[in-house]
Length: 253
Image 1 (cartoon, one colour):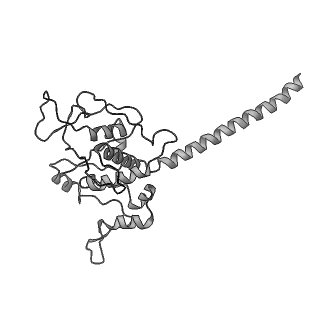
Image 2: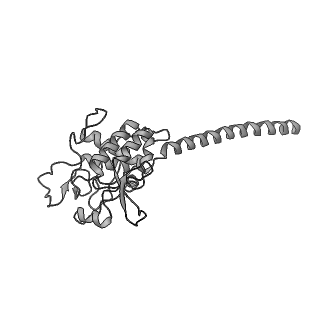
Image 3: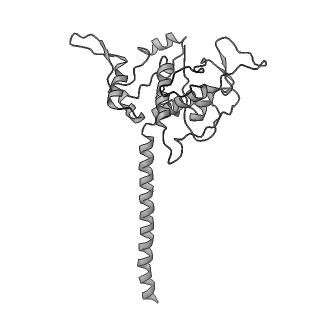
């Protein structure tokens, strides 16, 4: 079963927080970092595709509604069509019964399991975490997630990999229970982009970063506007101060 580990987003190179020796991962120059950083909408759309086709079979995205996909550049008709491709359990109806219906833009992403116990039962007792805020959940953030997803390699002869575990170059301790989720050409991108492991890892990392902070671009614009206003007011206040005190100095002279 395909699974995607949930992780997070920081600016600096990461060191893992799991048990075992510290492992340094890949540092990538993400376009959404910095005060003027923005999300790449093409990457976000590809990341949504990777999430939908690979990750959503195990992991929910419960804090994101289908209508939020307008941030990714989709129009109302596209969002409505995407939402309706999912089945939502609703109700109760007038007879007190639950019923199924096509998804609507106002619905939140449909979870893969009916409840936590069903999720654990389907995953050998392990609960697959929700991905909505995962990019804030681990030290190293986007770099950690990206590195982990591309870190599945053949183990060196000196390392014994026990049954149920997998070797990952960038995971602390190098042995991880999550199977490799991404493979070459694992998805067929709608825009024709080559679906390499590195490309899919980067795209789903950007998408999950957006899922954790969909308001990031608006927040940065507000912050820049506020700082600009304060700088202008500071300059005007300084000029006013010079003007006022120049008259006082003349009188004293």
